[in-house]
Amino acid sequence: MSHKVAYNVAVVGATGAVGQKIIKLLEEKNFPIDEIKLLSSSRSAGKKVLFNGKEVTVEEAVPESFKGVDIALFSAGGSISKQLAPEAVKHGAVVVDNTSAYRMDENVPLVVPEVNKEDILKHNGIIANPNCSTIQMVAALKPLQKAFGLSRVIVSTYQAVSGAGMSANKELENQSASHLNNEEMNAEILPVKSDKKHYPIAFNALPQIDVFQDNGYTFEEMKMINETKKIMHAPDLSVAATCVRLPIFTSHAESVYVELNSTNLSVEDIQKVLDDADGVILEDDPKTQTYPTPLSAANREEVFVGRVRKDPDLDNGFHMWIVSDNLMKGAAWNTVQIAETLIENKGL
Ligand code: NAP
Ligand code: 12T
Image 1: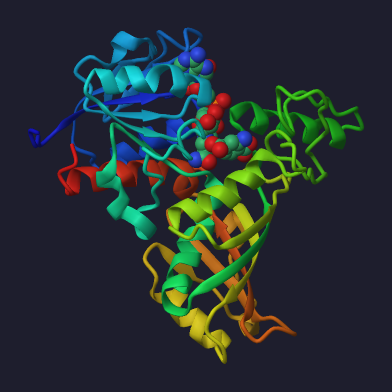
Image 2: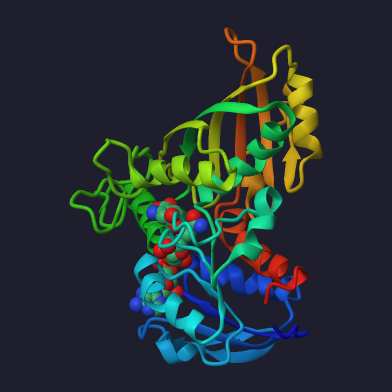
């Protein structure tokens, strides 16, 4: 394997909500790029985008797009990843995939660098980026698991519309304007574009993110359950989730309840571990009303934790509030971080 100083990088889904953030981060982090390819569907092919001050033309993603590409960052939906990620690998690229297409595949590492970066080097061409809600939760849970042991997690989420793409952002804007003008709200995208029914998200809360499974949970809830166990190497960890969409543009928030294995712990014990954890910022002081919110976490890379409390009834039970920008640590930043870690560890 040759170790280069600059790489040919392809961004698949470059015109989307996640792709645009990836491009911005590649610029800001001075990612070592020789050539960049910006790929989309035929709809956006031909658009011109500035990258590091130079004009780049967006191209339609086809199997031949990956000739000479070293790293391909995919965020164009699961079906595109299923179709084109193997083609990219055939051309010798390493794929970091942001969709749910390969996350639970045994041969594909599922990685949050602060939690399990050692798994990256086990890749066979594809590395999966976890679901946004899962990433921010495990970033806070892993240090607690390490310090105290962890047996059970119950989470309810408060998720932003940008997780469902640019069209969902537009839908919230349009519905908000309609409502304030005393017009009827038109719902076509949320909760799930391809599903049968649609409900307004503006001034509302929808207890459905992604499609329903046979067990009554949504796919988003099952992603949180299954991905958490895989990333934390904890097949026996009990996890249950309720995922709710709110009329917020950026950042997912989560109310998380954990049962630890150690007893006699104080709130300060938990806070100290979170304060010391990589990629986590503790913002927790009831006296000064200090806690993270979706707006305070927007455009930041880290995961923010506040409202740490002991369960009133169970000595080893704790509650907390975890907030992070869903397009940053939840998607684009974690993806770019995986690519950076690959290079640092000479995995390319
Ligand atoms: P988006 O704003 O709707 O953007 C979709 C992107 O995919 C656009 O660039 C679009 O190109 C491109 N695309 C659509 N169909 C394509 C095709 N047939 N061939 C090539 N490119 C195609 O959506 P988004 O929010 O950025 O999300 C994109 C995907 O990322 C999602 O479907 C999901 O799988 C994944 N995602 C993951 C997380 C996470 O939890 N880690 C979070 C959000 C999203 P055009 O401009 O040509 O339409
Ligand atoms: N449906 O990549 O709608 O697992 O917020 C992420 C976010 C799927 C994913 C969403 C979704 C994913 C959403």
